[in-house]
Image (cartoon, rainbow, N blue to C red):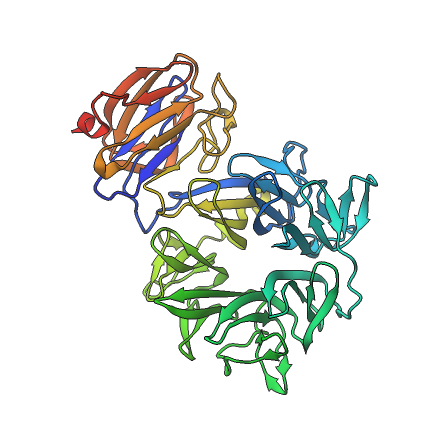
Length: 535
């Protein structure tokens, strides 16, 4: 049963592990800003399925506490994951659960659009939209028709149809809540066809201006005279006779092009994103537009090129996101192949941070390997009590039989450096399956004779102050536990007894203790500290 704990204290580059009769391990290691693969990440969600991905995530409290809702194109094809409703599920940080009967597209051959593409909280309710056209009604015990629904905490409700012209929209791609001076309304953007942006005030629809811009991404940004709603579109539309090149802003009365001329063209690629961040007290608007992938920043009245991925054989940059990992709010770029400035040709990262001045790789550069291709389609932050984490949704391709690749749905969690102590390397399958191909629940070790959830190792205190206290629970009732330290982290877990371990390097015993009712604490009050034990 593994559980690795690390510290952000660079003065304590040690690893600590707790092992029971069925091994439970953990490590405490210095936080490395350039995290190696696996360190700082957990795969909390993984489902094999021939097509599709985890495309959107949204935090919402429906009255039962905050949860992260995950939507996309997936379902429990083998009938083994009872928590999964069709194409949607929710996560409270510990346990997955169903969201009604799910959502789906009636004609399976339209799999390209059979997915939830957008979720947004408006007036206390969770709105869900995308390329589906059926939802389950418990009242009528039937699948009913709708491509936009509300989750009220118990079941889905249909949003009344839109009587205003919305031409040829295949799916809703993005939603955002914005107040243009007339009160908060929910704005909808669709793709494919000459479509208008639409808005919903909770009871009625209205068109947002008279520009057919097919917006795929929304963002609220203030240029210094009040917030504007920016929309990034797939079409090179015109505003008042002026070419917008895919980017326009809604001021409450009309669409405008306040940041013209643009250095990019919104029609070049379907991969797009839009983020607003305040850096050094100055508002910055970041735009990601593909073909080849580039990130641009608009600040102080001028555009500048922040990242250009041009010298890899198949560059893929898919999402940008504002997130504070403990080092200040910054821009994160996420994708399959991202080549940073100064990085050798032929190498890439999948996760990178831009602090407004320079790029930093999160993870070591990797050689290009098409057998481990990844796609990222959804990003969100969620705090289930240990600090805000960045969740990343998508799929990863694994080598399959006869040269094929099988996509796996993946939701990864990046924990950042906002805690003094973080737990990684669990026995939950996030880095490796346990012996006998088992796994405990997220945040725990491998299953043991006391619980299928696996034991859990926790730490409190401050490493630099030598006030650390380790506690393990859900161990077998009277097992003998061993606490030991190592000075290195094994990025590829190894089997250790009936569990897995990431603790490596020079190993030293810190202490042993008999569990009482499956619980162990080291040190107890009055006993030598952890630091005193390892000197």
